[in-house]
Amino acid sequence: MDKIYEDANEQHVRAFIIYKKANQTKAYADSTFETQLTTSELKNLFIKGAVIKLDSGDIVKPIKYAESSNIGSVAYIVPNGTTATSADIASLAAKADS
Image (tube, rainbow, N blue to C red; front, side, top):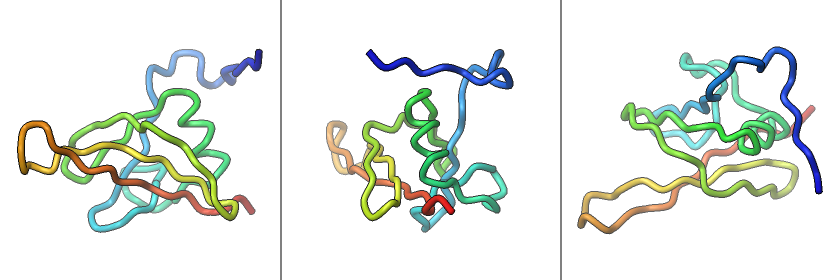
């Protein structure tokens, strides 16, 4: 069994937030959209149960983490408004680790 440990600076953290900017699919670390998350940061946040704050203000949970060509991404579900039971799957991507 693999174990995931918290860092000392995470002792009283209740949640991590991944930010989404309107009309973009980048995963940001801050609400000013200045710092795009790296692949290792995004993976760490997903494992630790982060939430995504959409540009609409809605908060959703990522449902999947994947990597392709050293770029991490998380998928999430958003209602599409067509019917009460219909939704779309969207994703946010990190940048490659340097």
